[in-house]
Image (tube, rainbow, N blue to C red; front, side, top):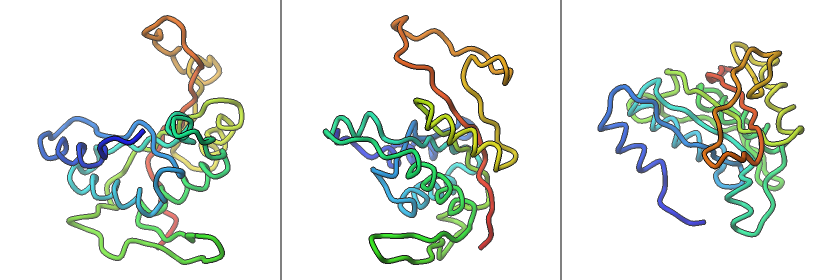
Length: 182
């Protein structure tokens, strides 16, 4: 599953538009590191301030297409928190093997916007991922987590699937990024 980079295309869309929201359906810790993904999203946010949406998931489709398993929900949860913190101008602990380093943006402003909000949507398929989105919603105001069609949250049922047979009911967590400090 190798294809063109969506961030390049979104950059072109950002320059050609002024109102539409732009984003990635799903990025995954198995496909990009949190610093690399944060750099891409902050760069897009500089081109289209406050119009960026970041979808995050385990990489189920992409990883299985490559013949590999998706990442764990715990890895997705850590990636989501790191990405949100970096995109808000914070500092994270970044680990590769035994090496741990504090990572943050060195330069922000014209080319990396960590000031305007980025909306984060966590794709959840199954009970473990749904628990991650629910915990994320409880721990991070002003977030809300909802299961599509769950009357207890007041969420509307999902639209009909184009083929009439959905494979699953997604769970999402809609959120703006949060600051944790610099």
